[in-house]
Image 1 (spheres, one colour):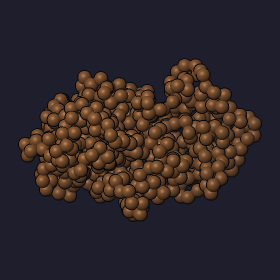
Image 2: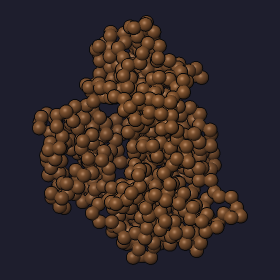
Image 3: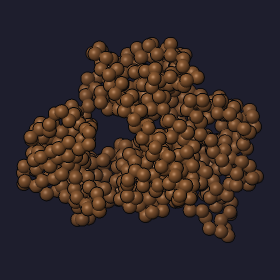
Image 4: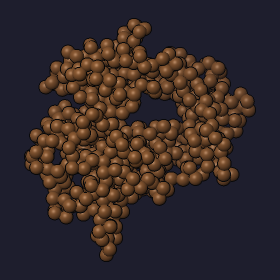
Length: 575
């Protein structure tokens, strides 16, 4: 939380006693692991051999059989992706994977947010110049009842791969793979769309192996796709359960060794990240937003092409274009967030408001999700932001919802839909994020019902922001050895959070860095040890306290080849 945040600081309790760690593993890292339920080295061993078996995921056998049939017949396969990073990486995994596995005619299509809407919609089917033998969806399709029906009526067979929660009706696809289908026993419900597609590629290879395709030739190395899987998994903010940590760790190791696809390496380059040193957060903050920007403001096909090309020069050109679009997105987002903050102030002037709905005539529909996320973080309330769906559809609103713990946002939308059928046109999503569309005339009633539901389901404690930390670092622990071990120890991310510590420091000196950041020199009053620190997005009109209680990450500043410890403050207030 940026600035002098009001979040309550609580410490994560250990979930057991650490055991069996080598002496070289820092005691503070052992405590961090224990607070996340990782008690022994075996539970942090992310070998690919420990990945959940594809045979455990329902629908893969039928999907593999159909894909093999189409490949044998030389049929054309159209991969229907999505306009976010998960969809783009999943599309790239599908195209690259199918080509590795012998498909000769593979193409892809990404819906246009404004003209086609989300998923395999009838509008997207209508826009196709011709119907392929097979449509393979990525990161979408579980809600595409009408689109799948139209595709099949026009002669295409359809495989749906998705990870979103299903609605009451499922599309009549020829095969469907989704770990979150009702009755599906796959142990990891947290697979991202790209992870589901990777599992399908593994299953297809196993199918081809079983029938003897590799009796006299080497099997394709699908490990070459893991950099893409890691990127999409991190960027989609799915929980990093053990299975996802295996996938992300393998992808990060591939990137660090310089074997990533040229597109990812180029995006890291424009993001000023050293591939040899990256962690999951670099994928989330440097690469993912640049890919997502294309889908938000222009055409995600540019991002997919960046991930598909094997030409280094072309990949750099794509990365530069994506970086430019991302800078435009940041400027637009900054303006929209400022406007949203003012609107939220007005909404929350009514103390009865718990669920926040915000709408502005001039907001861009591709950026409202980022705005909702920022307002949610600042206000610790579930938030839905709306914008006109497009210039051609000014009477239709597109909404993006973000939630807090204790309020399942997709289920909330389903409940509103059940209470007043027809109020919402379409919706879908997860516990913490969802999307919807509704007629402009329905907005006031939706806002009323959303607040009513949030008020029913959330109590005062749940509406108080809490910042969980891993406790104090003891004198002498905040050194480069621990910082390096923490960097290597991940992958950290959603539901397996980056380590945060909290200590009391004396502020020895400080100055303003850039337009709204602090650079500080802090002293540990217990032993006099001094540390550099930074804090981003602060109110620079207020100086830091002389003695402060800080919540921080133990980071590494490796500027110009030097490696020094640097604290990254997430919250700071008077001690």
